[in-house]
Image (cartoon, rainbow, N blue to C red; front, side, top):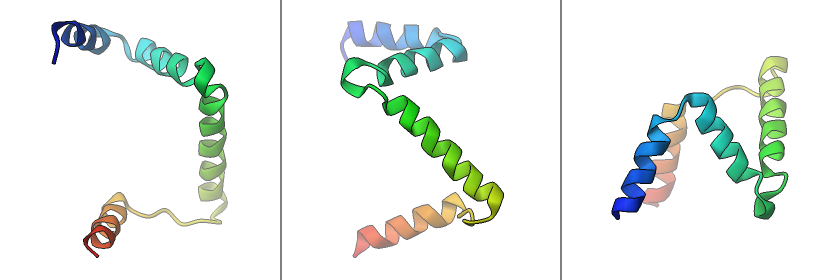
Length: 74
C-alpha cells in the first residue's frame, strides 16, 4: 500500500461516525451514481416494512452464508 493511501485511510478512520456516513453518502450520490443512495434507502424501508407486516420471514445470517457456501461448492 502506498504512503498516500495509508495516510488517507488513517484520516478516514479518525472521522466521526457521522462524518463517515456523510462521506459515503457523498460518494454514492456522485454524478455517476445519482439516486443510488436514495434507491437503497427506499429498498431498505420496503424490506423493513415487509418484516413488520409479516409478509416475509427473516433468515438468520448463519443460514444465509451456509446456503451460499453450499451453492458455491457445487
